[in-house]
Length: 331
Image (cartoon, rainbow, N blue to C red; front, side, top):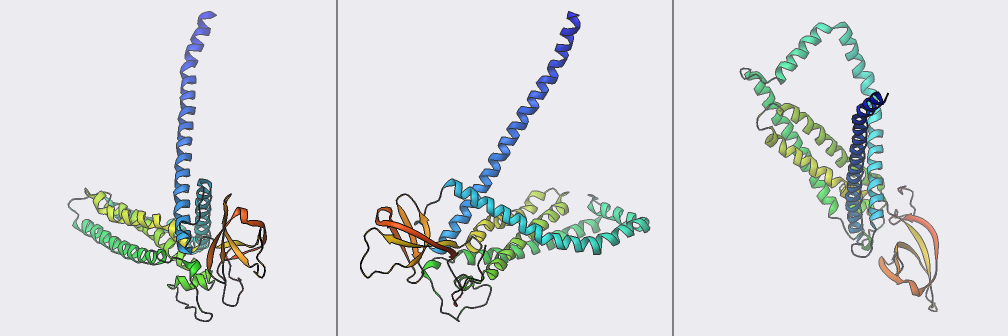
């Protein structure tokens, strides 16, 4: 009895060790994944916030915590995923109804021709040294993909660089009735409250990034059999990475919410004859408050000791239409 029990315990020991090792590996993998996700969210939030405060003209006037950067990064990723999903659901449904269904019928009723076509595609992808037509077709496809990707990247990065040059909007103004309607006039779109134009400008760069990702994937399949494939695919990978990295900054410059509280600051020592104006509360801390007066377009820092009380009137957009309404506000 003793010998059999010892044999069972000895036999069970490797299984227990394997289970513990597996759990340890899973915990290490989970911790590394969470750390990587947190780092990505933090970087995205930092880029979004930096672009946003630069666009408004608040650089150096407000401070943000690490938790704020994580929150902004999470909101950006969630908005991106939901936007892409909403944009893809309808096209995928149409594609399934108009393309996939006929293909399924063709597979059922025309297996022979499809099988021969599939063999030809496999032969084109295989590295046959003596097949000059396959090499030529592959080279032409690569050149076309590279040229298309370079064109998309150039136009997208040019538009992003233009958008990121917009700054100090809190100190700018536009005369009523003189808002230009061109999508490239992003400054006027801000100051006139045309937020649909801003969203269209961002969506254009987002789809350019998705197109570059698709082109890079296809180009990799084309050059996968070549010796210098890493160098050949390098320009597309670099352009895609650069454009994807610029997306958070583009989001912060164009789509970051500009809704702020409207407050009335009552000073501890009121000045006779001095009116109390409605101002936007830009930032608050233990030391004081940063407010923006839309009528004078001035930013003021008010020490906390100089404030008797502060009333919050509403939460509105910083920039509204010339008529004075915020019907086009972003939520």
